[in-house]
Length: 93
Image (cartoon, rainbow, N blue to C red; front, side):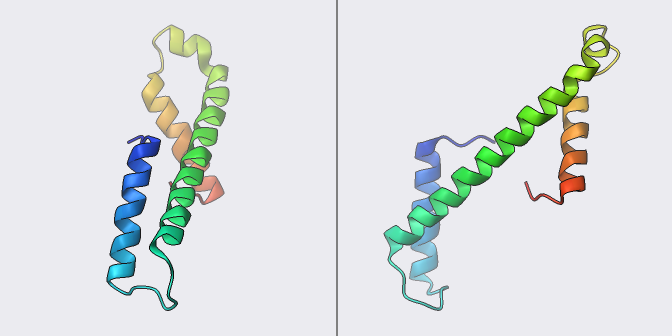
């Protein structure tokens, strides 16, 4: 599920408030600072996944004729290649 910037902001605010309210951190931290950290982490993770998706699309160009002829299913191939790259690189997505 893709999140837009406003959704990431709302999620970041919710998580930061929850963490601070429940005293889940050893050190005192401002809620806004934590929210910004969470926002940046989520945003960077989504950028990494976008980059991985672009790499998968580049790899899929090798199978262009099979995809056009209907011999391969685009979504199945995309997911298979993506999962293989995730496994090889030991990524967490």
